Image (cartoon, helix red, strand yellow):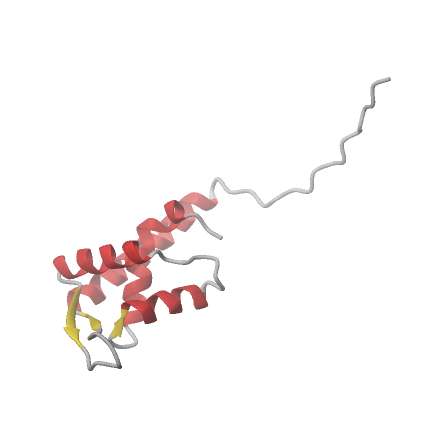
Length: 120
């Protein structure tokens, strides 16, 4: 599983990408992130709702209550035009980030077998 520290700066991008397909709510977004990453990244509930609050405060998403489904009302989130523009900006930033980090990341090399020394 990937460390949340590594991916923290891209939680907003992932959430906005999912909202490009239409309004959604927290649990559904969380499950879709896990599914698309093949469980390599599972976003914590506190991280997810902190991101929603930040995105809404910055005008990138709006929220509204959906219809009840046998329990409490769900809060749905919808991307705004400013959110679409921010998403595009984050995608450009990601391309640059990949280029920079790729200058330092080397493919894993097989390690030569080490001779085992036994002491008598």
